[in-house]
Length: 563
Image 1 (cartoon, rainbow, N blue to C red):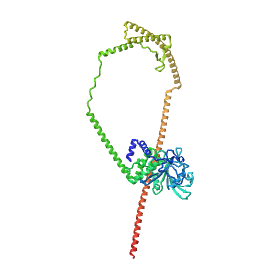
Image 2 (image 1 turned 90 degrees about the horizontal axis):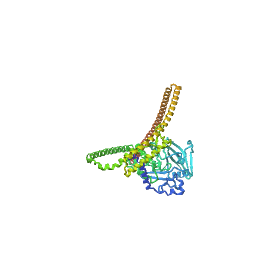
Image 3 (image 1 turned 45 degrees about the vertical axis):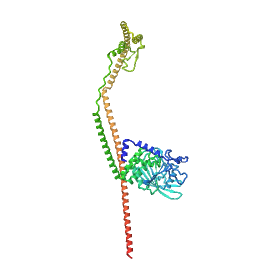
């Protein structure tokens, strides 16, 4: 059990295990005919939590004979439980009728009436006038009286009296109410839950001599199933004396044959493991110590095996590296003949030389005021000279296209014509650059004048401000110092507040842990006192028996000898 818990925690396999159990339980699911009858649908709190036909509790004094409850029997442990939903307002009378007919002496309630602003159960019992409630509630043929209650911050134990109008008979009913178990969740600590379970056991309401105890939460499957699992497995460990031979998953699948969906979440399944281990530790310390020692031995053996396997694998890897074949020499690169390369590259080289001689014309430029921004100025619409430059560019481009087409066709241009074309192109580009430079000079001069005027105005303003403030830089430095000191004081106050809050939380946590340990110690002492009392009772019975035998023998001896 310890090894299984450790493996599931390390591999985070609780979700996978829970899904596998759900699938296996669904393969053995029973029929739900009675629960799905039209006249019984309104008697179910949830549509998807219905009782199996073969194990449902049948009301004797009907109609109706239906109640959303199942009898769970574990015959090898002499344990019988009735798991049911939290009663509705119109099914509370059926609930108390079941309590009476099944000769139940205890109700184990694991939820609150209202949880997360939702009604999870009807108030089917009286809480007394001290709690602002009545001392008696009536449900057709039954009356329920409030007698007394004891409890702590985790659970409450009430004593009720159930009276049957028809027969006039009265019975004492214990109402065990665990109040700190969230829906679809787990208790804060296994210790508090075990304290509640030990109180239930101490009253003797789970013994086979009385009727089965009725256990319910809101749906009667999640928290109720966890309670049944922990109690039954602890009972089995007590009877067998060995916790390693018991499979929690097998027991869960066994009790799921009686009611659908027992234990609703992977967290509840994990809490079941933890509560069982904590219960064995408290009730059977010798068994727990033995299991712990075996677990540590198994872990050490497993670690040694891993180390040995690691050494073997590293040795094999080294031997493979040493015995590996030598790497083959690199394959020589393939080379083309120089004649083929030169002939293939001749037309490409001619095209590259001609493209390098072509003039490059720019249509857009960045002004000095933009300073590398996205503000682009198009020079095509500023002056007539720019239009002539633009026409020159078009002529150059047309000449470039013609030269490229001639090259593609394989026609060679005479050297005289190429020189004249290059001279004309250079003249056109020069005219275009002169026009561009003149327009740029005009713009930059205007922008430079504007920037000079702005800088003069800014210097005058700053001088006036300095004259008015006097020692301005000193005052600003002093203000910065004051702000820094105030910020330091503020952060110091915040740190003290956080430290005080953490100290309060730490103190509360320590107090809560102390209360839990005290509760567990009290439970241990109570169990020890019960065992001592049982031992003294057995000794007293033996002594009385021996004394009775001796007295009878003495009387018979006197009778026989007296004649």
